[in-house]
Length: 121
Image (tube, rainbow, N blue to C red):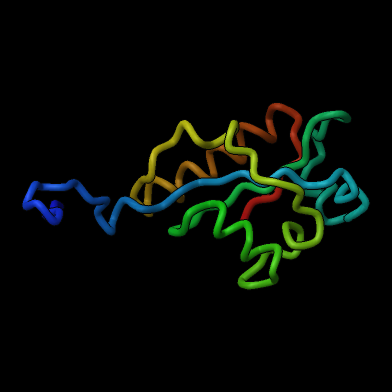
């Protein structure tokens, strides 16, 4: 999809279909006191990060701010979220909803297999 700028040149725009992002939030290790989180991560390796993996149609920074403000928030991110970890997700470009949904699951599995404590939306 293209539009024209004020001079009349064609400018590429992101299609509505490909505006989804996968994002990773680092969680405080205090989350390990949550029995539900521990049960979801039986292979957690002490010293590895605890993270939340999600997907959004918003900019990940905006979505993180909404979590922290309690707007459509995951309770673990709201309570234990420390910061975004772009080093773990920024290599993935905006993508379609289906691609983001699949990647969210794949990343959560990969991180969990690496010993991370993972919570997924």
